[in-house]
Amino acid sequence: MNRIIGIDFGRKRTGLAVSDPLMVFASALDTVHSANIIDYLQKYAQNETIVRFVVGYPMNLDNTPSEAARDVDAFLNLLKKKFPDVPVTLEDERFTSVLAHRAMIDGGMRKMARREKAAVDKISAAIILQTYLDRADAVKM
Image (cartoon, rainbow, N blue to C red; front, side, top):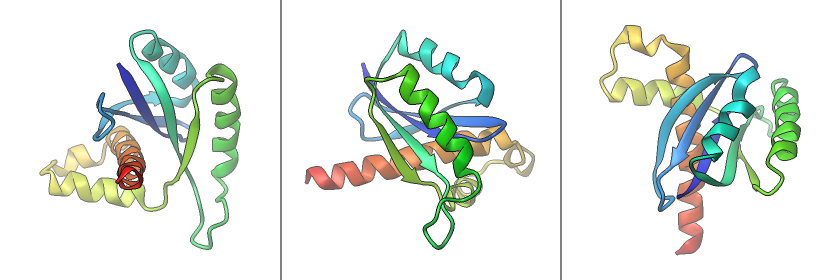
């Protein structure tokens, strides 16, 4: 089945999200050590068809790339090399961590569980992907 993968890349951990087959909804998938992300995606691609990557891109409030953008740029080069036929879309990731914490609170997650950074990363990836899916759906209308 065709899937879109949302990625919240970080120096240590990378949050992942996946679309449903109809590409309407994003769901948190996993959090992976960043050094292992390409291996994880290659294994995932053995069972599912990845049709697009949506990668969160860190921006400052003045719309310039933040310091973390260098790490994301290096990751993007590797991603494009390993998956040359899969298009990559960049999505502004400003405030996704704040939105992830809000979603965790609204969803009734206990305080101790909200401190788990891995949960924040994969929920952030889901927010990045859902933002893309919502905009893509609006364009179809």
